[in-house]
Length: 210
Ligand SMILES: N[C@@H](CCC(=O)N[C@@H](CS)C(=O)NCC(=O)O)C(=O)O
Image (cartoon, rainbow, N blue to C red):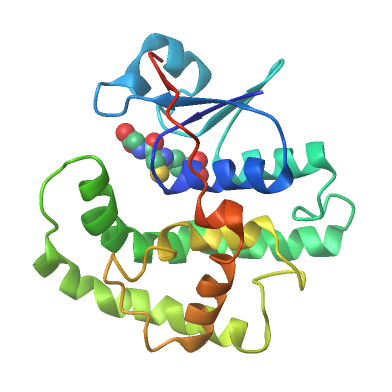
């Protein structure tokens, strides 16, 4: 199994899960700033020219949520509810909500403070973030209310929905996301950080030409 990654939030989910489930994989770090995602070889695997991409025999998979579900099925983990349709519906709700609402709300903060610093893309445009706070708080209120009497986002246990929802918000303090007023989100994010593979998902350096 090969997992192509860059040091960013979508690959972070898949990397953390491989580690958490104790699966074996070859980690291939793609040289983002050197154009590694745009090479013909990589584009043949992932025509979006984004990371992550998983290759397992004949299976070539992109989209981190799909990759995570695949990894759980391979490992026999209930972090994806392979045998329970009602739980699958619940998972789809949160995966979709993340991709349509929560992700876009937290992404500007993550990009300005984390992505730019990681890849040497210049200083954050903090003034440009100010008008984005209201949208983040709107959706944070939804997640905070949901987490009021829950430890995890879905199915009453740790699932890939938590990894999907938390991959950018995990950096909320350094990214200056206005989340301090949402105690259930803070508790949930701090709880995730006690999972070793989540706290440190990054493999040792294995840069490839792809
Ligand atoms: N929805 C995709 C998102 C993939 C994505 O946008 N990956 C980013 C890193 S988080 C990327 O490759 N960015 C580099 C680029 O767009 O050039 C997933 O969950 O896998």
